[in-house]
Amino acid sequence: MKKLTVSLDHCQYPIYIGKGILAKLPEVLQEAGMTFRRKLFIISDSHVAPLYSKQVQTVLEKAGYEVGMAIVPAGESSKNLQQLEHLIGECLRFGLDRQSVIIALGGGVIGDLAGFVAATYMRGIPFIQIPTTLLAHDSSVGGKVGVNHALGKNVIGAFHQPMLVLYDVETLNTLPKRELISGFAEVVKHALIWDPSFIKWLEQNSEELMALHAEKISEAIYRGCQVKVAVVSQDEKEVGLRAILNYGHTIGHALEAVAGYGVYTHGEAVAIGMAGAVRLSTKVLGTDKQVVVKTEKLLHAFELPTQYNPSHVTDELLLQAMKRDKKVRNDEYSFVLTSDLGSVELVRGIHEEQIRTILQEIRGGKA
Ligand SMILES: NC(=O)c1ccc[n+]([C@@H]2O[C@H](COP(=O)([O-])OP(=O)(O)OC[C@H]3O[C@@H](n4cnc5c(N)ncnc54)[C@H](O)[C@@H]3O)[C@@H](O)[C@H]2O)c1
Ligand SMILES: O=C(O)C(=O)C[C@@H](O)[C@H](O)[C@H](O)COP(=O)(O)O
Ligand SMILES: [Zn+2]
Image (cartoon, rainbow, N blue to C red):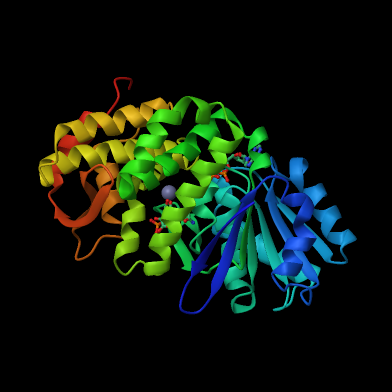
C-alpha cells in the first residue's frame, strides 16, 4: 500500500492507494483514530452501490459501527441542489450528528456531491473519500466539493477537506472503458502541468495502462496524486498556483454545461479543453507547435478526443459559459496556458477573437 499526505495549515490527511483496502477498512479507520465516531453514512450511486456498498457496510458493521446509506442515480445529472437537499434529509433521518462521518463511495460525482453534503450538513461534518474511478484520483484529493448549476459547472460549492482518502485500485476492474479513458485525461493533465518525466513515462506505458496493468495503474494514480498533493498543499483555496489544476477546464467546463451535463464525460471535455488550450498557447505565448502535436498525440494514445461535435454547441454559448468561469476577473477571459510540456501558467485578458479561432480549430466535422 502506498501513502501520500496532504499537509495544510489547519489539517493533515493521508491518501492510501493499494489493493484490497475495502476489506481492511476497520483497521484503517482505527489507525486514523476514528473509533469514537460510531455513526457512518455511505453515499454512493446506482452503479457503484450494487458492486461495493454491501461489502463496505458489512465490514464496518462487523467492526461495530452503525452504518446508514443513500444511493443516488449514477451520472453527472445527480450533481445538483435537489440531490443535496434529498441527501441532507436522509442524513437527518438517519440521525447523523457532528461526530458522525459521511463516506463518499464512488467516482467524482459522488465525491463532489457527498463532500458538499458533508461541508453543509450542520455547517460541516467530517467525510472520507473512497474513490472508485480513475478520474477520482483527482477529485478525491484537495477538498473542492460542490454541485452544478444549469449555467455553470461546480458553481455552488465549498472547500472542505476529507479526513481520509482510501483508494482501492481493485475497484477499477469493473469500470466501463469509456470511464477509464475519461480518467486518463486528468492523469495526462497532471503530467502536462508539472512533470516532463511523467509525460515520457505515460508515452512509454500507454498500452499497458489502457489494458489496466495493475502495477502501472497504481503508479499512474500515485504520480497523479503526487502532483495534486504538491499543488494543493501550497495553495488550498486557489489564490494562485492551484489554478494550474484547471488546465483544459475553461473550454472543458463550458462544453460540459453547454452540451448538457453527461453528454461529454468530464475527462473527454477536459481533453478537448487541453487541445484548445495548447493551441491557444501558440497564439498567446508563442509556444512551439510541436507542443500541440505532442499533447494531442499523448491524448490520442489514451483514445481521448481533441475535437468536439458542434450540434447545438455554438461559439456564442461556449463564450458565454467561459465568461462565467471561476477564473474570470473583471470580465476578462482567463486560461491556463502552456509554454512547454510540463509547464503552465494562468494568463488573463485573452482576446475573444483568439478564442474564436481556436474553437474553429477544435470543432469536429459532424454537425
Ligand atoms: N473536486 C475535484 O477536485 C474534481 C476533480 C476532477 C473532477 N471532478 C468532478 O468529478 C466528476 C467526474 O467524476 P467521474 O469521472 O469519476 O464520474 P462519475 O462519478 O459519474 O463516475 C463515472 C461512471 O462510472 C460509474 N462507476 C464509478 N465507479 C465504478 C466502478 N468501480 N465500477 C463500475 N462503474 C463505476 C459511475 O456510476 C458513473 O456511471 C465531475 O463532476 C467533475 O466535475 C472534481
Ligand atoms: O482541484 C482543482 O483545483 C482542480 O481544478 C481540479 C479539476 O480537475 C476539477 O475538475 C475541479 O473540480 C475544477 O474546479 P473548478 O473550481 O474549476 O470548478
Ligand atoms: Zn477536472
